[in-house]
Image (tube, rainbow, N blue to C red):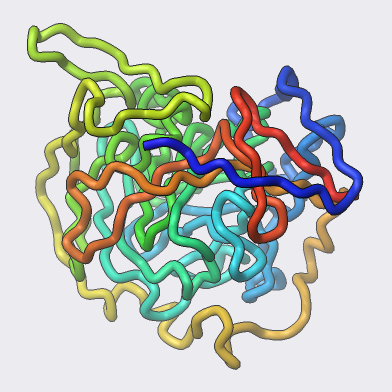
Length: 378
């Protein structure tokens, strides 16, 4: 399956991101205790891709449907967030550097997921990470297009996608054993699109957080990065075993091997002949839930575009985001592997995270080898 090359017409002065640029202080290296979150975690001001557009200090004054909060949480099946565009109608690829947090519970200072948007969820906790996957109506969160993309703590320049995005949980063992303290997950990845989402947040003290939450397999989507047994209309919490590190598999000869995704978008991936077929890691002790019982905080939250969907005004308290607007980057694949897709028919998204094409405005882009070419609208 090859990527679709989109023509690019420059309507403004443009600049090209240096392919050799990488942050000297990447996001995964930033240890940010929950009680010491800065206004913006991204302080690198020489990144050609741009600056962080939202903020990380979020509170009751920033909790509305225009919030630019870029701090999200994955705590439990009734308390998790997804990344989605700040501007309705954008695709994940167009907005990957500028996504904001949309949460299922109040109290995080974010936008709220509209009532009825989430149609199934499987929440799995292992000794090394939390995995969440499910189906949803992405249009209700303002996500445009049909193909998906990857959001992760790496990004093409080390600043993450979204740039400066932080992820916390109170479900890691280090959280005092009583869910009292939010712990930062420095390695995480989410795939969102095609009305499907999946994500993993790795415990920094667990086994191989970089390998289990690897962000270099963005073109393979959920089936390979976070394989799950999602059933349409079902909401469940399970214990689980750790999966093998992403890209690692045991061959027919019993030997452990590692698959390497082609480094260039111009190199097509033959999805039908990949060296292994991923399977979800074993789960146990699954507990079912009813959606009406777990999503009580969003019972009255309307979908994007509804007359009652958003309060007026912009976030206060944390102030307006500083710095100039970063430019959307990333590529969209015309499809992705669909083995094991949920019975609802949602197709799991392939990603865009660390390589791909710029989506300029709503319709133009270009695929380049290696790192992304970014058009800076000045």
